[in-house]
Length: 439
Image (cartoon, rainbow, N blue to C red; front, top):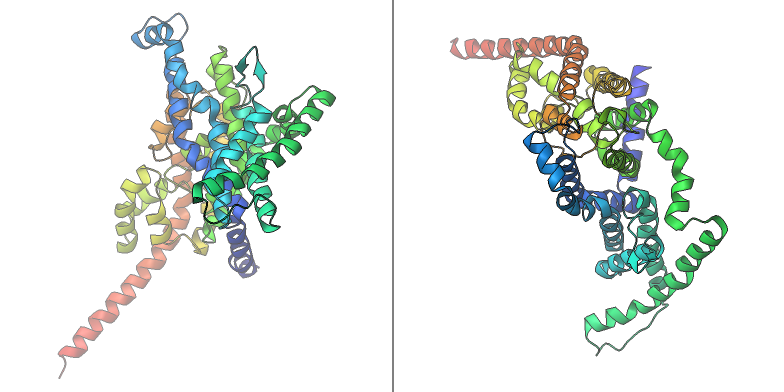
């Protein structure tokens, strides 16, 4: 039975996951969100600066500075994290168009951005409203970022468009070739937006957000945390980058959850009572301490191992593991495709997920309002993400200890196996040396 399961994971699930991960739309979505990460990190950091983790009556230097300069601090937030859908939709249009060798990615990016603004940024009293440029517009940005390049590819495939002579300079010719796609957008997406507004009172992003509400709500649950973690771990064990595949699917929901918390924090809601729990730092710093599989605990066990191989892997993996880079231990041990470590590799993050979820649920620490760089050491990243909640440090330490306890018996089994192999190898080498000395 065990062999059948491992055979299924290796021969069926891994190739299937690899195909999904290489699918052009999944890759374009993933790359678009990766491109937006610097804006998100900087913006969420400034939000933490503007709202210190102290009582409103506090008179310390940080609180006083934030109170006096809140508008100046928040302006960069509004133009980074606050309009992140602009970066996402333009990045998605660019990356998807790049997969079609016949399209101009730059023009596809511009048209995607223009289309999103057309339906998501109505004018109010002569000003462009930005309500849907944050988390509320994520799903609309994704749909438009896919629609525009696909529409352009369709028009090109069937030779629909303005064709200027080759004598016309390349840039001018490309610019005029975009006229028909722009017209198609105006006569398709814009009337659809007007129709939806007249029928429901919602513009397109608001209507799409209403449709996605059940999924967004379901994403902020313990079941979602455990399911996403489980899938990522199984895929990683099978040799596929599980986090990249699950991230391409779940990231829009996690960013939506994060922006809800940020808006609530700006309205004065206490950090422990913010609306949502599941955002990306929950995985990066609370569950996957030291990288996928919560392997920093295993690295610490390796450092004191009696096996020369494991001791060497532990020493080599410690510094990268502190910064959540665990490829040295995952592939050096190896854990990937190693049946001995399958159970703790999957189980340890699940238990850490349960501990972390209920720590947030019982309001033992502030909820997540920022996204630090994923290479930030876990305890620091966890505190940073929760607006410097000291309790986050202790939750991370508890998860590290729990992961170590789960890994320990499997580590001992593998250590014994390697020590037997090392002794056998040493015995054979000694016999060979003795035989060479004999006449």
